Image (cartoon, rainbow, N blue to C red):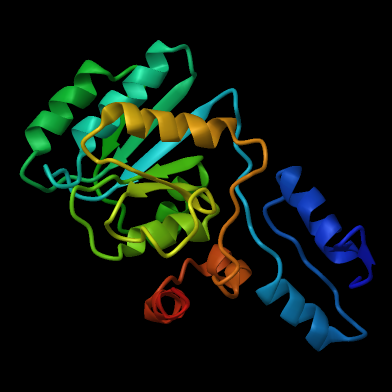
Length: 231
């Protein structure tokens, strides 16, 4: 299983083929060298989200405040929609100082934008992440932002703000792209860049035990600290 062919192990090749064919659960029966196989799976296999280029589903989760920049997210997606891209935006949130404007804008664009309250059930939240292709949160001001890691743990590339949050922790294009939060065109351009990326954006190798995270959705302080230490 760990024999390499053209720089990739047979196990990795098999797992990637299954993922690309939309297998959601993979059971590996290990006998010989079990510890090495388990270590390889936990630390070497990098998850990536396969983008469905015919139907792009974008996701935002958080409060509906001016700082979170939800109106500009809608405008960016609308720009791509007007260009002929089959794209939808799913908003998950309810509180904040811009709720009324976000809901009004959502109603005006209900053919491709929808809104629902915060999802408190963990498994339903996992399903929401997995049903989408790109996570977008170009806040004007942002802390490290666990929600980015939640999205990444489910294989989603992310759009984030230059100089804020997770910007600087990863090379540009590795887990997504940073944007100017005040520039709708830049946000739209980076979404399009993810859609058009031929080599799939992959989740950073420093996120350990990604298979466990993918099943249990336990993204916490240990993961955050691991990434911060590697900055």
